[in-house]
Length: 446
Image 1 (tube, rainbow, N blue to C red):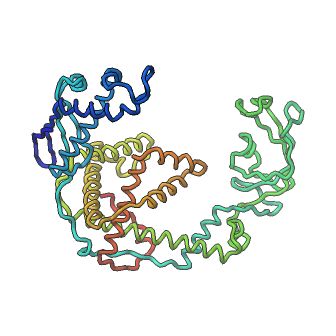
Image 2 (image 1 turned 45 degrees about the horizontal axis):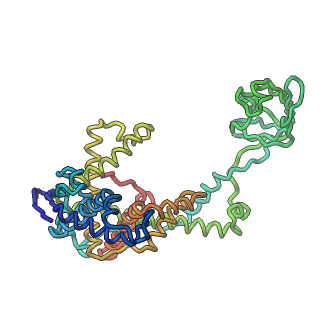
Image 3 (image 1 turned 45 degrees about the vertical axis):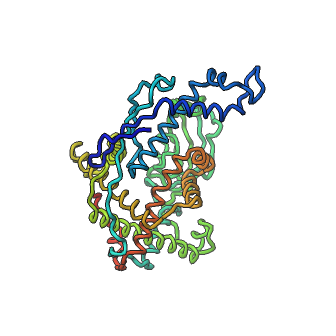
C-alpha cells in the first residue's frame, strides 16, 4: 500500500492511497482458500470444489468484498499512522476505473478526504467556579399544586330551583327523542347529566337549554348531521321532549381525603406528601438544569478554536430543518417570526457552532476523565425511551435491538450528562437561595 499526503490545511487532510492489483489478487486467493472447505456445489463433494471453479462462479462477487475490505483497512491504517482523529465519516473518491479494479486489471487508487478534530487543551474543571441557584419548597407551593389538581377535577353541585342554566353549567335531564312523531332507539334517557357548551350532543341541542330552570319542560328541535353515524337518523329532523331535573354549577373539587382517594392514596396527608416530593423534584431538576447551562456557557466562553466545517454544517442543517417545520406549522417563536430568513440563519448558525464547540470540549474533558458508558446505562436509557410510548414498549425495544446506530446515538446524551456531573463534582460550586420565579426564569437562546 502506498500513501501520499495531498493536503494538510487547517483541519482538512487529503491522502492519495494506492493498493497494488497484485495485493488484491493475493487477498482474493486467500478468501477463496478460506471459504473452499465450506462450499457445497452440485456435482462436487462438500469442500472439494476446485479453487478455479469457485473463482469462475463467485470471483467477481468475492473481489467486490475484497475491494471494500481493502478500502476500509487502508483508510483506518492511514488515519492511525498519521495520528488523524476524524471529525466525521471520511469521504472516498475512487480514482481508478472500478470495473478494471474488480477484474484485477488495475491498481486500487482512491483519494481519502477527512476533517480532523482540532487540537486544543480543555480547561481543568477543578479551576472552575459556579453558583447553583436553589429554591426551598414551602407550604404555599404545595397548596398551589393541590389547587391545580382540583381545577382538573371539576365537580357539579345542585343550584337553587330558580337558578337559570348558563354555559359551562350542567343540567340533569330526562328526554325522549322522536323523528316523524316516532321514538327511535337510543333517543330516550333519564337522569342524564349534560354540560352546556361541551359539544357532546347534537349541534343546537345544548344551546336551547341555556336559560332553563329546574322543573322546566320543553321541546328541543334539532337536525341530525348528514354524516351522523346512524344512517336512519342522518339528516333527519328530531324533537326531544325534555324535562329539566336540576341545574348544576361547576366547582373545583374539594381538596380532602375523598379527593386524595381518586389518586389511589389513603388520605389528604398522603396526597400532600406525594405532591411535595414531586414539587421538590421539579425544583431540584430546574436547579440542575440552571447549573448545567452555567457550566456550558462558561466552557463555551473559555474555548476558542477552529471548528470542522462539515460538523457545523450538519448541525446547522438539523436545526434549520426543525425551524422550517415550525414555520410551516405556524409555531415559530414570536421573536423569530419577526426576523428575516437571513437573520434567522445567521443566529442559528451561531447556535450550531456553539453546539459543535461544546460537544468537542465535553468529549475531551470526558476522555481525560476516562468516562465510560456501560451497557446497563444504555439499556436503562432504551427502557426509558420505550416508556414514552405506552402500549408500544416492546416494538421500541426491538427497534433498538435491530439498529446498532440508534443505540450509538443514545450514548451522546448519556456521555454529556456524566461529563457535566464530573465537572460539577470537580468545580467549586456555591449554593445561592433564590425565589421560584428567579429559578424558572428563561435563559437567552445563545
